[in-house]
Length: 380
Ligand SMILES: NC(=O)c1ccc[n+]([C@@H]2O[C@H](COP(=O)([O-])OP(=O)(O)OC[C@H]3O[C@@H](n4cnc5c(N)ncnc54)[C@H](O)[C@@H]3O)[C@@H](O)[C@H]2O)c1
Ligand SMILES: [Zn+2]
Ligand SMILES: [Zn+2]
Image: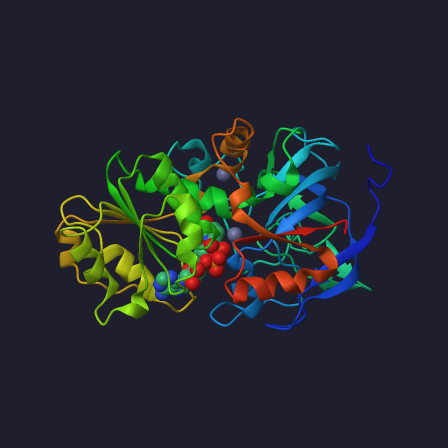
């Protein structure tokens, strides 16, 4: 056991006190892990658009003060009662949607929607006692999606941690903790394009580029990238994107533009924007008879999906997925091995790096559309 086990740890965390206001570096107290919980020292974290939505809280339930962050890599500091699978020193990736290994979903080969630990964006407390493990001078600070990685130490349920190869560089594989696994898995596990098929990817951020990468390794003949920012196309070529459509350049709906480009529609589409109109277009741009569309972007809480039922009757399929259908504990160690074996390249997703104290710069870069992934170094 480490010498801090069982004690409160004081460390730095970036706290979101209010919606849309810059995060503030604070000294927080992190309580020891309780039953089935693990305390982790975070070494690297990165920013995913989902953090930004819940920080802005425009279309989401506001939960403040809160420690955001869910894409990260770290080392186990101590474990709580009942934890046998992890020990201090293990290298781990926190995952926002967990795997208890006991419920019907965890036992099903098809689902990663664990009954106990599936993503819950509105809960700000731990399951064991309904309380937060973070506080500042006695004031509780809420958790985010069970991970809260914008802190030097955080506490998670053991089911939200993937134990990975200790040789894997955490400053690279941390991006597998959310975005890259999500996009890649959405294509290879859910959309499942066949060799030679056409794929449209809506949104060319890290998640969409990982979806394109999944299409490339599946042998897609044509990958059509759709984004409102034309400069995204240059970077997207490295991920196998062959054609680019900016909806702003056309005076008709983008689904019609894509249908014309592809003789009736693409075989598969993957939506990675979070925009409801893009979700509808991603569905309506797939070919009738066999087309499959997969939604990945996180919608606003009041969004509703509207399409004519005839689009389904004409044999189009609409699916959605969290975390690319991967089971975090069972599957992610293998995805890390793909990187170690050079079957999956992560470096090309990482465009920026900042010190923890400059975390707000990572938000600016994402909001301006300048970064794909920005790694935040906790020790700098
Ligand atoms: N389902 C999951 O498990 C899961 C996991 C991670 C992220 N997400 C979601 O995936 C989405 C992408 O995340 P990211 O980190 O790559 O974000 P990002 O901001 O880096 O990329 C999003 C891209 O979408 C583009 N875009 C926005 N609206 C568009 C529209 N109407 N048409 C075309 N392009 C549009 C933006 O210009 C941007 O390039 C977000 O909604 C995020 O919340 C979902
Ligand atoms: Zn994410
Ligand atoms: Zn479960």
